[in-house]
Structures are given as structure tokens and as C-alpha cells.
Length: 156
Image (cartoon, rainbow, N blue to C red; front, side, top):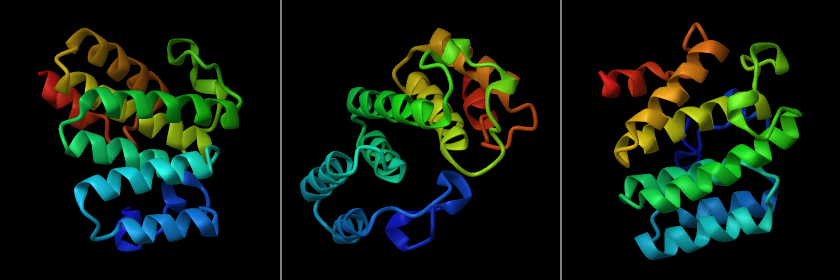
């Protein structure tokens, strides 16, 4: 799934982005690095309840090696998704029956973002946190539907 290339986000996020946000995302394609960051931040601020711009922004920062920024955005995304999915704001407290993590929508996005935080934690050298995150992912997604096994392999 890649909103930059036009592949839709419904499999993970459960819906489309608002038209104004779509226009911003479209304008980010082919933009300079600085412009892309500014456009994606604008998208998040324009529609703070829309989950896809958070994904694009934390992925953008991570790809640029801006791990603190990626972590900050992923934590914000996790909080928004938790509210939308009606699950605990503390990821450590979330239990398997709290939401349907296999169905597209905020709970699945939350789970995917938890995986992203695991990856970011590995890259930041926070192995203990990454192990905790993988443990929670293993509990919530035993079939590894979001692909946390990649993060787990980095910890081996």
C-alpha cells in the first residue's frame, strides 16, 4: 500500500482520506524532501483525525533517518487510532479482545503503527522497548498479519 503511488489505503486504514488531504498527498509526489515534509505535516494538521497522513509522515521521517520525528508522529498516530478504536491509550494495557485487529480500520492501523514503533525503536537502539512492542504484537496478532516478524528478526 502506497498512497504516493495511488494504491488505496483501505486494506489497512479502512477508508479514504478527505479530498483536501488527498490533494496534499498528491502534491507531495515528486516534491523535494523539504517540501514533502512540509506538505505531509500540513496534511496531518489539516485533518488530524485522518490516519493515512500520519502513516506517510512517520514513514517519511524514518526513511530520512529522522527517528525522533518518526517516533513523535507514530506516537501521535497511535493515540488518534486508539481513540477511534476505543482502546486504551497505553499500548501496554491493550488486550486481544479489546478490538478486532484483523479488520481494516483504526484498530488495524493502531496495530500497524505499533509495529512501526518497534522498527523505529530498533533503529534508535532501544532494543528493550522493541522487545516489549514485539511481545505485545505477538499477543494481539499471533498470525503476524501486520508483519512484525520483520522487527523480531532485527532483534535476533
